[in-house]
Image: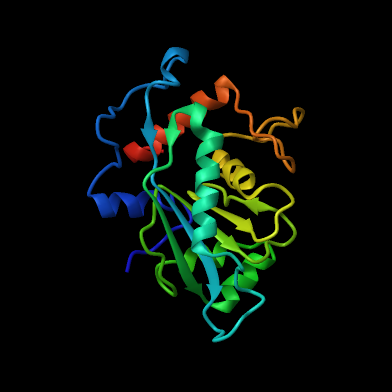
Length: 218
């Protein structure tokens, strides 16, 4: 069973699965794209999404996500719509339901992810990890979502205050090197709104980081 690690989560697993850097057919490594290439050069980034369920309950548990795999596929479509103009394409998209020990989910419900990341691939299975991995859980300590620093993982709660695809896309932005926007609520990286705009400079950074993930250098 493959094991997740807090640093570079998703990268090492994808490299192990593919035997080398992840790269879409026809893509070549290079420097960050210039303004004229942003909308023409496509970067394919594998995305895996997971419904998290309580493995210690045979019946319904308040710690199990109320989502289903069909709903996650709908979220993935919304994520792609938000990121379309960047030229980053999240493919392939895989969706699974996973069973996670109750103590790990309880930690997540209190906003702590370290035990989950240490145990993933050891105490519970995470099939088909991608370059970017999203986990959907019942509660996250009062926040819509978060991305553990230095990881390729994001978490989203069942009942965020913004659209599911928006909070997911915001967290993916963090994975791709983007920081919070403090002033403009129309922007994707502004917290707590449904803004979805990405600036040209943010697109350049995100594409550069996506290339680094694919090359195994990011």
